[in-house]
Length: 175
Image (cartoon, rainbow, N blue to C red; front, side):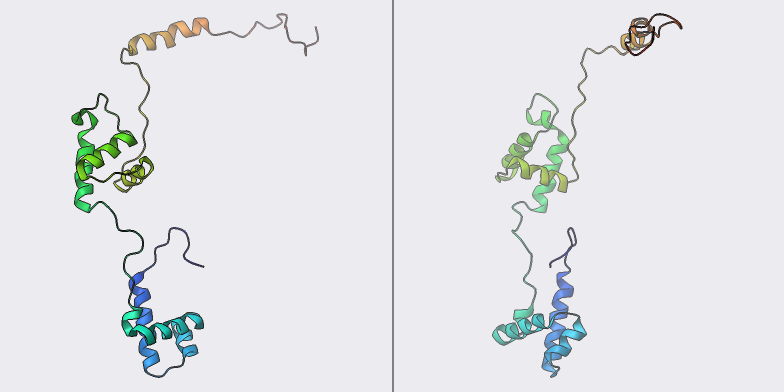
């Protein structure tokens, strides 16, 4: 069954529940009653009894962190973010645009850890950075000339509606 998507398990609470089961079992409470009191399936209690028999209470302790340990420490991530804020031009790139390849190279240069570009985006999101595209505007753009064109020239070029009663080229109108 598992957890709903995006819901984290409370590992401390799960461990407390297993320890409570161990305490109840030691007091002589039967397995069905332990399951009922703790709100778990009886098969779960049977598994806990086996773990108690093999490893004692240590067998019911939480396993620790789930998944692979991160390759980058919190200090390394702070250093990477500091470098990101300086901008790519400070690191010798011609433009002020961070790409996944550039960030990957920065991480490898700073830490010696090489990531795939797809994972670089996960790291950036965890740092609060988002993917943004630069606006495609010419450096030579003249705002005054554009405003003039929109206000005066464009209305001259734009099609105007025909006068009432003028002949139509539409085949749906009766002539």
